Image 1: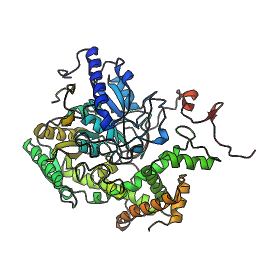
Image 2: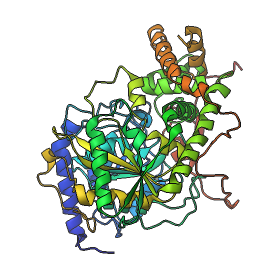
Image 3: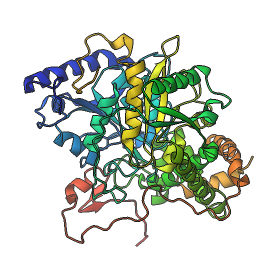
Image 4: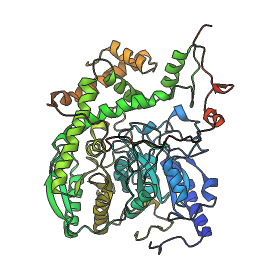
Length: 476
Length: 96
C-alpha cells in the first residue's frame, strides 16, 4: 500500500486527533453535527492498522460499547450500547480513531436532518440550509472537516443525499456487503451502512475496512471483499438516465451538473449510452410502503420495557401507549402508523404486496439496463440543499424528493454520490452512480474520474483554515 | 379523506401509540395524503409478477449449531428502566 501520505508516529496521530477535537469545539456549536464527542477515547492509543491516524465519526444509530446510542430520539436519550456494532469492531481493528457520534433524523427517518430530537444539523456550505438526511451529522462533520471520514446508514438515500447536499462523497454498498449487526434496525431489507469522506478514495478505503461476512447478520454476504480502490474508466460504458434528467421539477443546475459529469467521463475514455428505468417512476410509492411496514415491526421493540425511557401509567397497555407517544417524534409516529395501516387486515394485498411486486419490476429494469452499460449515471437529488424549515410542514414533498435514491435501495444495488460542481451561490451539486450488485468498484471508479476532472472537492470554504492533511494515499 | 378518523384511531391502537384529538386529526390528514399519492401502485398491471422480499439474498445461510456466549444478564438488564431480581419489571398484568 502506498503510504506516502500516511501517519509517521503515534504522537503525530494524537496531535491530529487533538486538532480535530479543537475544530469540533470551535465549529460544532453552529453546526450541531455531533451528539457526543469522545475526547478521552479518541486520544487513547489505537491499534496499528491501515486506518492508523484516521479520525472517524459514527452515526448515532450504530452501537458503540459503553457509549450512548440515541438514534436522535428521546426514546433512547440515555441508552448506552452494551456492545460494538460489527463495523465499529472493524474500524477499531483497522486502527481508526473514533471521535464521536453524529446527529441524524430520528431513527434514520428523514431527508433533511431536521427530525432529530436534539436539534437540526446545519449545512456547512450555508448555515441557513439543511445538510440533508438522515445521515445529517456525518455529512456535515465530513464537509466541515471535523473528522477525516464518517459512517452513515442508507435505507432510501440517507448516505447519498446528505453527501450530495454537503459536497462530499457517500457510498451505499450492495445490501449484504456490510454487516448490520449493531445498526439499530429501521427497514431491514433496505438498511445498509455506508461511508462518507471528502474524496472518493477515502470513502472507498473506509468501505474496504468495514466490508465482509459476519455470521451475526443473517443477510451478510459471504463474498470475498474486493479492493475498492478506483481504477481508470477507459472503455467503461456509462448508462445515462435521460428520462430522469428531463423530469419536470428538476433544478436546471443539477441537470447541467450531470451533463458536465457525463462529458468529463467521455473525455476520460468512457462511452455514454442512454438507459431507462421505467418502473422507477413508482419508487416513491413502493418505498414509502415497504420501509414503513418494516419500521412498524422493527420499532415495536421500543416499548419502555427493556431499554430506553418509560412513561409511568396504570397498566401495561397504557405504559406502551404513553411511552411511545412521548418517546417518538412526529415523523417516526407517521411512518409507524403508515406501516401499521398498510399491513393491517384487508390492506396487505393492495399495498405491501403490490409494493413488493413493483420492487421486482425495478430489479428487472436494472437488469435490462446493465445489459448495455456497466454503471448508471443520474442525479442524487432533484435540487441542491433547501432552506431549514422550508419543508417541515409538508412530509410528502420531502418523500417525493427521494425519487432518485430510492430505486437502487429497492434493488439492493451499490450506489455512490459524488460532487460534480457548485451553484453560483456555492451550493454543492452531485452525481450518482449505480452499479450491479457487488460491483461497487465500477461506481467508485466512475466517481473518481469525475473528481479527477472536475475536482478536487474539499472542505466547505468557511472551515478550510487549519484542516489536517489527508492520510488517504493518492488523495488531493 | 382516504382514511377515516375511526380507522386512524384503530391504527394508533394497533401501533400502541397514544394520540390526542388534535394529533389524531393531523395524522388522519397526513396519512390520507400519503396514501393518495400511492394510487399509481393500484393502477399498475402486476398480475403474475413475483414479490421481492429481499433484493440480494435468496436464502439465509445456516450457522453451526454450537454453544456460544451471549450478553451477560447484568449487561442485558443495564438499560432497562426497571428491573427486579433477574428480569425486566413491568406493571402488573394479572390480578393474582
